[in-house]
Length: 399
Ligand SMILES: [Zn+2]
Ligand SMILES: [Zn+2]
Image 1 (cartoon, rainbow, N blue to C red):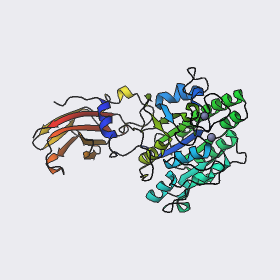
Image 2: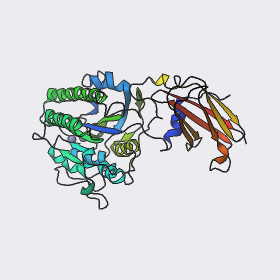
Image 3: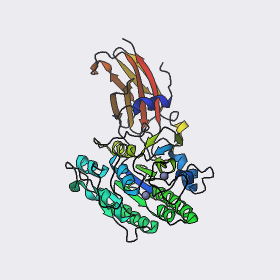
Image 4: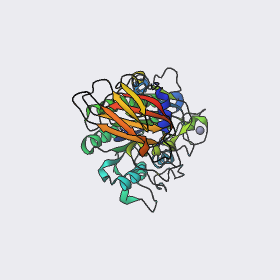
């Protein structure tokens, strides 16, 4: 009889590979420009990010040691987000990144239309995010851009985003919310805090709006971060490598991110582009970062993580000579998907069965047809009913 194993084990195995299909079809990146960590997650009252802390955090993963380890200025920070490399561009908008952006990777590999990729502003000088100067990519794979007449207004940037999402339905967009940084530079402490609070409300509204739009609902990742913080001992400015300038927030929500998780591993801005690539199914070969950990596919939408492993289909696994038989003992009137992974995380079998009448579903994995020389060993399986939670387990094939 197969023993039930923990989800964490399956996640660890699967996260080591890129072998599962992401449930995420769209990614929206939101950058609150220049919010310091001590006014976001690092403030124990969380008074400036009430919605992110009280509502969105429980549906997503927050990262408490997330950094800009490059130049802590606006254009370099944003270029590092979209390229996955530390970009030493100047900060006046006169220089494009020299490595490809996620928009170029996506359009070149997936053949996506220009309207599927959007840079929404915010600061007009960030229009350099649409494409790089890299000779194999560049303007032919550029994103669309929606600039703002007022470069420092979140209201204008927000209106741009709403218009773009409703009108164009991009699959990948980045929004810059500039007001927080602007009010910091102006030396307006209360205005700076108010701008973070307004951004927090808008981000919560955005998440709810996405769930209300069938194009985005349940299949969209929202990634919220900052391009840089502000000096530790002087909040008006930024740009050095002090803790205050480098330490920033990250929130990830979507069907492929674990809900209610706190990730305290050290990560940085250059990990976002590879994560976006993994979510949307394209490679980011020139990116230097590595993807954030994703979870094995489970039902889209708000999830109770403790239930994800117990509410799936009931399955009895019987190993036989040269293979394993999976008997689904609970009635299933919807398609079932089964994945079997080796202990090294390699996917060795996947199958899907549509609705059947009668005695139910039986899957058989014929291990003798596997490519490896010996099928003996430990395996992990995962089964999912369409749009229902996952069930997992492990079994051993004898030699
Ligand atoms: Zn900035
Ligand atoms: Zn500093």
